[in-house]
Each structure stands twice: as C-alpha cells, then as structure tokens.
Length: 276
Image (tube, rainbow, N blue to C red; front, top):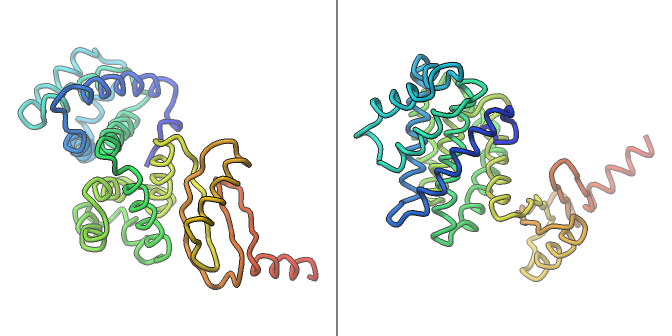
C-alpha cells in the first residue's frame, strides 16, 4: 500500500487535483462515499489486471483529453457518474508513472471510504477494527504469509479475509483490508495494515501509540496515558492497547520509530545486556 507521501512530485500534484474533485463529488447530496470507494477500488483492480490499459491511461506524455475519453468509453455504464467523474479527473492529470496513477486511485478509494465512516460517526470503530485485524495478522506469521503471497489469486485472499474477519468488522473496514491484501507488496500485509491504521488515525489528526501492557488498563489509566503522550509529542495521540503478561509489569509504548520500554521484562533485558 502506497501513501501519498511516497509519490513523486508530479503525481502528488495529480492526486491533489483528483482529491479536490472527490471532495466536490462527496459534497453533493445523495453521494454515497462507501459505494464510491468500492467503485474506485474496482477500477484499481481492473487496471491492475489490464497492463496495457493502465499504461494508456497513465502515460503522462499522451493527450490528457484522449485519456479522459478512453476512460469514459470504458467505464460509462459500469460505474456511477460520481465515480466516473473522479476517474476522468485522475487520468487527465500528469502522473509520474502508470503505477502511480494506480496508487493514486487507490488512495482516492480509501479517502472515500474513510469519509463514509466520518459521516456515519464510525471512524473510531473502523480504526479499532483495523488495529485488531492488523494485530491478528502480525501475530500469526503463517496467516501474514498466506495473505502476502503474490502468487495466490486475489479473489482467494479476499475470501480468506471475509471468512476470518467478516464477523469481526464492518463493511468499510473489510473493504480497506481486502484492498491492502490485494495490492500489498514488499514487507507483507501485516506491515500494510499497520500503515492503514496510521492513515486512519491521521484522518482524525492524531498519531498512533501502540501500547503493550502486562495487564489491561482501565479507562482512567488510558486517558492519563493519552494526556501524557500528548504533552510529550505536542499532538493528540490515539492509543491502541494490547495485553502481554510476558512483560511481567509496566508498559511498552511505540510511537512511530520511537520505543519507550517501561516494562519489567525490558528492564531485566537491559540489565542483562549491561552485565554481558
């Protein structure tokens, strides 16, 4: 899964333009963000399969109007008017590569789905569901490997996601997870899901702190910890808490690449390193 920050300059400008169209479309009465996001993901799937079409639509040296006409001729009647308008805007921009057009459309689909969660007041729930699914995948290396296997059919991996998590998550969370599973490369699905959790938290202008605790935290303890981390980092922090009795006592806090190990197990390990 690619984030907008990793796109080249031309592609970031192209994505900014397409995002403005997406915002306009979503601001219209009757717009259904969840449906729009799913349609954009379907276009991503199409362009992933059809390499020649992806190259034709993502060729920044060709006539932008010709690219828009091609998209219109292919997608009219197959996607809704709002989805077609977003795609037409996207393919009419100058992307650094056809691959980055694909990444941009995927980002637009995510934005539409998360807008749907915001409008429904369920963004917190989506973030929590994504976090729990990510932890399950990361904690089961064989599952992570199966979902990350690029030789396996995408539809089979989607079915596995539905079978495993269909009863544990809502439609928006499942759609986001399925998309990560479909296109994740490199470091595996678990890593991609963790990035998705961070993107969801950023949607609410917060950072994510992954907390591992030797025992469950009370609501008051979580609130106090969130306030302390906000004071440290100067911004609101979303807490995602896991319980691991192996820590014996205390907490391990990870924010980005920074780890604060206040657990008994961590202190014992540090002492052993000193003695060695």
